[in-house]
Amino acid sequence: MKVFRRIGVSILVVFLTVGLCYCEAWGSVDKERAIAHYTTGCSYLEKGQWDKAIAEYNEAIKLYPRYVEAYFYRGYAYDEKGKHEKAISDFTKAIEINPRFAGAYINRGAVYPKKGQYDLAISDYTKAIEINPTNAKAYYNRGIAYYKKHQYNEAISDYTKAIEINPANAEAYSNRGLAYADGNGQYDQAIADYNKAIEIYPKYAGAYYNRGNAHINKGQFDQGISDYSKAVEINPRFVPAYLRRGVAYGNKGQFDQAITDYNKAIGINPTNAEAYLNRGNAYDGKVQVDQAITDYTKAIKINPRFAEAFLRRGIANGNKGQFDKAISDYTKAIEINPRFAEAYDNRGATYLDKGQFDQAIADYNKAIEMNQTNADAYNNRGIAYYKKRQYNEAISDYNKAIELDPKYVEAYFNRGNAYDEKAQYKQAISDFTKTIEINPRFAEAYNNRALSYYFKREYDKAWEDVHNAQNLGYQVHPGFLKSLRGASGRKNKLDEPME
Image (cartoon, rainbow, N blue to C red):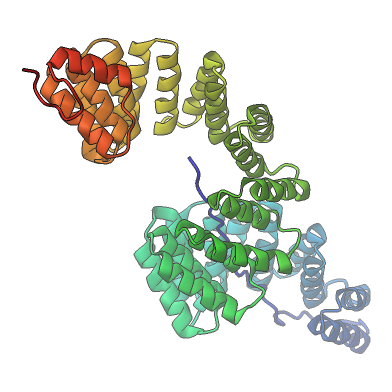
């Protein structure tokens, strides 16, 4: 099964609070010199000159080791430099000096997620809320931490509280929309929130982008494309929006437009492996397999652990009949991600193509173990059993595939073939009939049902299906036609009764 990779980027904004908040008695400290260094540090901070700001805060702290604001802003500068441990240390020191410093809790809470420590972040935001229950930033940031932990209901609750305190917070609406969309697939609620964010801030490219994702998830590709277009109009270097618009075009079969978007993304960021992956998918959609392989290879060169790129290159190699190369790619994808069910499924299909049925079954077993709702894996394992003439096992797998997907036309067709091999023609006819009901242009189903009718000596029905198959362009085997003519007493293709 060939699908386009969907690329999702959540636009989240974390506030770092700045502001003077606490002063102690200075005692005999050289107050003017300490304040001078502190003030100069703040001037550098506003200009983004982090090292110079830190140096000035250092001097202020030397003169007054309990200068809480100097620790606070030095922590901010360290965080901007990516020195998260030092930032946490400074915010912690500010809290030690002033345990009621809500801003220091908020900022320390904002650093912990960069280390993957979401529980510590939530604890700090909770403390800030205890100190100041009307601090919208604390609720907002805690909502982000809950979102990252996939605790979407808690995130929605915090974003809602942040909005109650500050109804003009466009980011809170946008992020609550993400929580609605990612948590329970509540895309309509998400779109309503993105609408509100855009109403507050019409140049909010991220909100258009997120609304586009929601539309795509609802199958509304044109609306999604419109939103992505607005996002790149606002921010012409918004790579994720080009990528997502490309995916939407691909899902509509508009592969040239998709390739144009991927080219734009690559032009902005030539090391974006996903852009090459998705452009490869578009070339594959145009049946330009060599170009697809070139792009998948480029994606792998950029990111040698890109399991999805190995999978897609494996599919392309398989389509070229290069089965050993395909198996090598699937194997590499599995080495990178041992839980990659789709790679096992596709490697199994390639072993099936090579007639290595036991290896195919082993891979399908693994794919099913990882995803027991994978109807394709059951159907494909059924084919392998069928090829081994283990018809009961095959029928059991087709049953499961149909249970998972009651409209799975190939599974009905395959099960019909298995019943036919077991001479259970009534069941076979029932399955071929269901196949035709789902897809009235499935010519081979008419042909195979004709065979089942033949073995049941229902020759008129067999001839009717033969004609249906032929009318759909199917070449009915001459040997079967000869046998049917002989058994039915009809002398030619015009179906005239023999005198």
